[in-house]
Length: 198
Length: 280
Image (tube, rainbow over all chains, first blue to last red; front, side, top):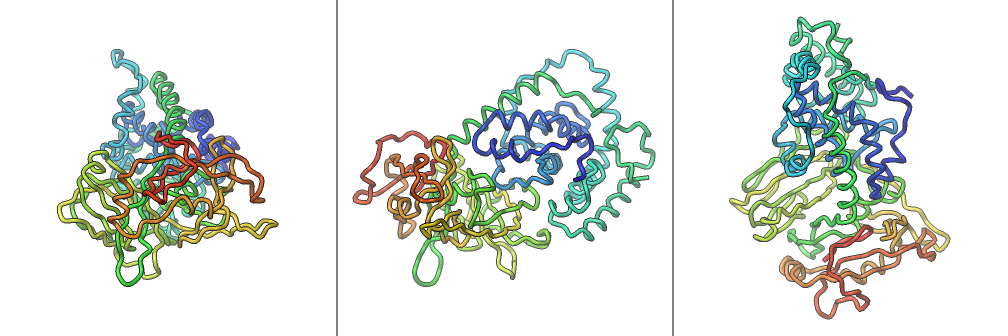
């Protein structure tokens, strides 16, 4: 089985089944396993630390809310989370509206210190956030899984309800669109950079 | 992996809140459910019902349990949109392979919404102010024309629509010849319906025992009248697939009319716990 970039050969099936039966700690273990990757993707979509955190929370809340229709891909909930993060980012305010109260209750570090590292990541991700926002929702979902997260095209197509050929064609067009939108992409743009753009 | 570091306080707080969310909402999940009226003659009647066996099959039962029903794969996750009055949803962008659709509807003001297949819901002012939500899953016919929602003029409501690929699975049959699994999309039920007991055991309740406690209203007015009746909690056994070994109990919150009320009640009116469903 091909694994997602940076993800070990772990299977979420057992944890997911325990979660859907009401085992909160099992759901927390899924959170531990995937939240960093979801946050990374959310930051690439928003170039904003706070928004990325809200999107990350929203993705996991959606995972729970939509638990009866979640599909595991190769035993992982991560592809579903990433696609949902992309969907939420398309309309940040509306997508997270249902979780406004939930998010407002979460504890956060006071924004009193200047975080140089965070600023650097923002600078690096801003071009990507702008370019990805130009893609259609369907293209963004495909780009998320295949270009940014190195997921097999066939599995991504299946998850997104596309034929492999349609996914290939759509991905080709999306890649060209990104090339045009990111002509001077910085070489140190953080992983996962779509190296296929070259 | 490399990437911006999320706020550790936020992450810890979110983790704890998610654990709480899973624990509390699993216990209290009682989705309002509306389904087509079983009516004779032409035309469709909108009948308001709350959740039942299908809710359990779709909402609480893990995938290995889902035999005899429909294994639904969401082809993308929708975003709620707000509407006023009737709505027609084009199907031009429907993903290839779609053969079902799920609606999550919330009433923002009183009125009636009739779904494309004739099912629907009616919300009064209390429903609207409470933000009552309804989940409904429907098969799509091969024609797949636009989806028309016939809605009371001026009614405000939200719709989250998710395209589905639905794959039927087979029921199992035990030594007694009883079928077990989940209710099929068309409405037919096995003899033993998959459920999770209040003690967490996964098993099946007997459909005949469930049906005896859940008479169906004959028209919208009766459904609305029943819905205003005081609720009470009743239990039926949860069996292993052999249909005889009792694993636990399954709770139902029943809004029964006089004369149809089940005899064996515990008198509680609290929200159902895990393994329960609310039904009219």
